[in-house]
Image 1 (tube, rainbow, N blue to C red):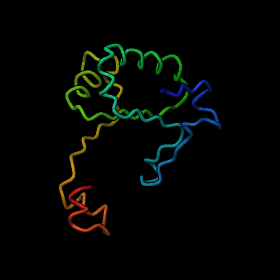
Image 2: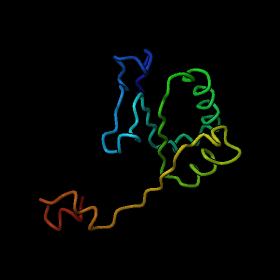
Image 3: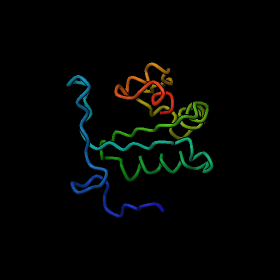
Image 4: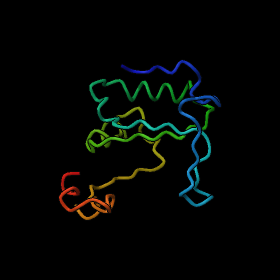
Amino acid sequence: MSKVISQDPFSAHSPIGTLHSTTLPAKRRIHGPQLSLTNFHSLETNPTITAILQHTIDHEWKNKNLFLILCGSSASFMETEVLGAKSPLYGRATSTLELTGFDYWESASFFPRYTHEQKLLS
């Protein structure tokens, strides 16, 4: 069941809230509303999703100074359908970041109190 937010997502009482990044240097910190859409690639069954997002950005969020983060694990979808020249969102990305998977030792470091067997199963 999806929860629909009926109020302005950028209001002071918003469930989205306003986040501030404290891990970036002061000149690179993000101030203002941030919206993260994870698993964005799962929306590829809706071919108009990027056009809908473009229209919303251009008309509804035009003066909101929104920092939008789109995350997806399908690199080909993100490259062609989101960032590609034929995408309605083409040219709007200010930054992209490709993350690689963790190896065993990197993953195990998240669980320092686990036994080796527990780390393998986690």
